[in-house]
Image (cartoon, rainbow, N blue to C red; front, top):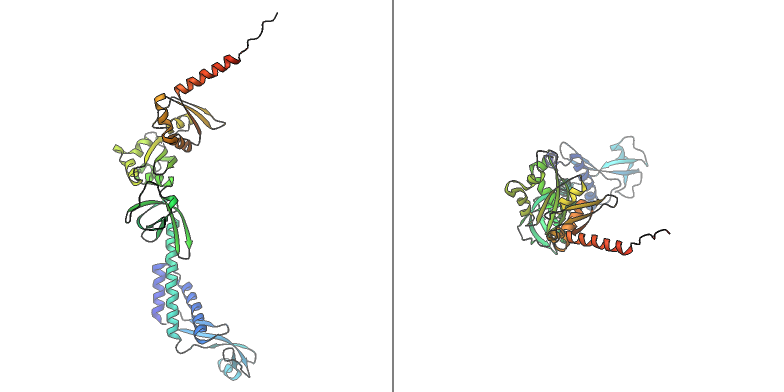
Length: 365
């Protein structure tokens, strides 16, 4: 052990942010264990570590006695008085017990502690870095498969793209570069466990925030988002500046902004609609690209009946009901879609029922 170790510890504190005193405390604890392992037990063994020279000494508490029975625990009275002239029988006295060959063992133990603490510190730094990125997107490279999970190399750490968080139509090839959404970061004994997603709706939201300066600056706000990953996403946008068209801002000149997002999510369709505080307007817009004739809302039940032209019914409902389902999820309203013909038939049926049940009052005699 030497002053070089002290210098190394100081450098570690500067470069890695590892507290010098915490390292020294850990080294001292490791040296106590090393002493007991290599030179036998010692009652209350203590390590003295010189902060300036790096010199290490071992001290142990021993009982002062006229008739020592165990050299590890007892010290003769005459020897004790050479250390402390006031020592008396049955006193406990601290005695230096540093072995001659302890320097090499101490250096090895110190090295192990330092290496371990560096690893722990680096894991801690990486954990903090990615923990702060929960709810954000990061970029990485597909490194390997572990069963059905895809391991993404983020540079400083690896992320796990589990099977449920993978888009069913996407194929992840080795060395592909991906943007992923950080769902959760856990601290483990092997380092941070970073769970990421390609299916999360917030992935699309964060991608728009990267591509659209007006969103980043707070002029345009994404009010809602509904997604069926790999197929279709609907987002509702609102502008705080009446001179800025929120939909146009997200689409960009010749569609360049929205296309950048679509490319990143590999061709998934995106409907961008204008948010409105008026439920009827909002619901009407949410069914885009279908054209809506009328929306009747029931505030108490938070439900709405939407009337569309006959030729727009299938478009409004969407394949397997997807368009209507996403619109309902986006708006938070229960939506019942009917065509003009269906509405007409419904009204006619109601009239028939009314006429069938109608009984005029008998004239009074």
